[in-house]
View 1 (tube, rainbow, N blue to C red):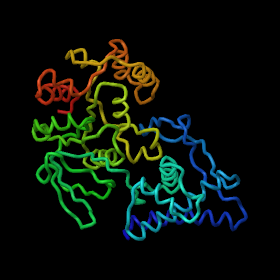
View 2: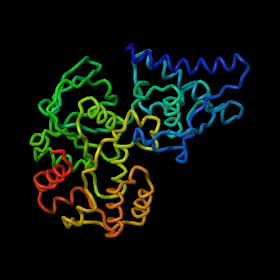
View 3: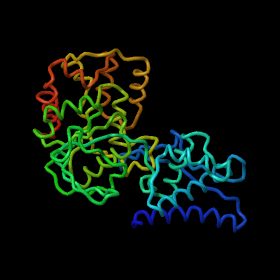
View 4: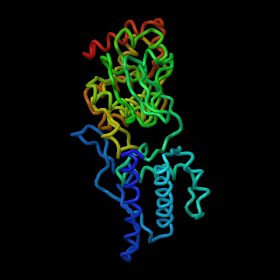
Length: 362
């Protein structure tokens, strides 16, 4: 068992020992957590990420509902500790089904949302991430393509990979736990995070990663934790600028926001996952007008989301207020692939070089 695995296991056992000690002292067992509601999420100006506020809630065995939650926590801690000891791993989905076989019927989860939330609770109270518990999500499939050489730890030992020369057109698939990767060498000038698979493929086919020494990170929609973690590590450890390229709609701006500032769901890990220095390259509402891009009309839900973003601390800047107000005024949204209306090479020959030059990245 690695040192990291031993630490994770010790933290879990310490949690279980605390329940035992509470029993031994004649106390009702309980577990205190930050209140996980939107009203208890705060935007930390100093770090530039979302964090939990001061309000807490207590899971106590003084009610049937609370006792069931602690029972489920105890069984899950036992399962995770044995998993680490045996050097095994499992998925979040498997944990939900595994609970059906536990000795106490009351320990079984009613649905996967409940088991997912308990894993997040254990992350918070143990200060150990689920990746270090050896818990995996279902495969995200997010990839890297660019001039990066790395070493990864696998079950078959270490292997060194160049993320252009040693991979196919699909790129290097980001592992569930990017902290098992060592960065060996690179010729990267900047990191380009791309929302859609179609645009990622266009950039690779056109050789954008080679021509501009770009590391292309496919976000695959709302990015998985592993994708955000490796992006942050690349920025922090290699001192590389990060830019985010998405569709031009409010939901895609939130994808940018999750990369840069973190998400409400994972506020307890914002400083581990978020890259506040990441910048937005487009599609901007301004681009929709300037390039006369093909568009769709804003739906009522889009308008509500844009208006909500005007009240969101992550978007309270002159730049975002100007862009969002413009989008509400024109009533339109556009996809990344809309740039193809000006030719398949327009995005790599004109759009991105112009925008990146304006931003001082090139």
